[in-house]
Image (cartoon, rainbow, N blue to C red):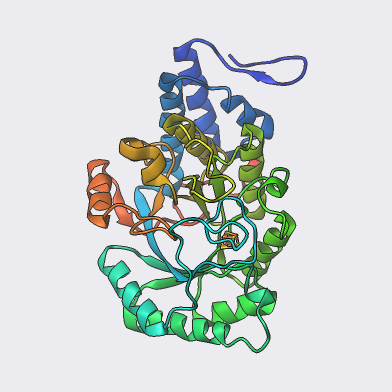
Length: 368
Ligand code: SF4
């Protein structure tokens, strides 16, 4: 039985069996359509020890099964323009302020090259192919820049020639640019919040967290799904992680990439230790409790942080993953990913967005 103390902080049951029971009851309420409060989410962060974290994962996996099913959303990315970025994101090796070692610098890739890679991504089993560019965003491109037109043309060619769904991650966009992307056939756009509003200034100072939120709103008002998540392991607190997940819930984003920081040499966060795999699992599971129907995507750092335990993430709430290589680091071969999914009884494909999966309750209200 969970008790509330005078400070209204929640005390978790100490007994393993009682904890399991409490987690299952909480999962049942979430599956029935209730939304978790910040104080309950914070209580989940008190769960310690591998055995208890696995109980948390088990309950999160039940939420994933009931609210999303067994299809795991597979996508691939291409870095269409790399390096020399004006922004100072402390985790990123593409910043001109702290160029990381081994981070390539090149201008916008040709449509032919991008379309060819889109075809390879489809052949490897990806259902979506995302064009990612360095930079603060299209919003700040010179009006004479032809790059946006080139990207729109490339997106149209990907649809007709590679027959895979194109996504984009081109930084901040105006409402008009979002509309133009939607008209070209972009249905999903990646723009991460990266961290909580409170922690963000410790990570980036050349633009604000609010700037990022504005772009997410512009995308959604153009009818584009928001693929918006963040990075775990940058020195943030558990409360920061919870606040990030709650902001994503409030913004009603459809897909949430969870990056696990893989510290890059030469960046200001290069000295940080890699996250412990069980801490990452705990964060993934808590995100699933807060975001029961969203697509939760394993993104950068999966192999580097989780290593041999990466299959456990798919039993802790994850129902999507990037396959192939990342922006500045290599991923494992897609065949290995397909084998991992098969061994877990999961199928690679397209996962439902919130509201699409049949058994999912609508309009959750905060009550647990
Ligand atoms: S994360 Fe994006 S905006 Fe930030 S430095 Fe890297 S490329 Fe630039």
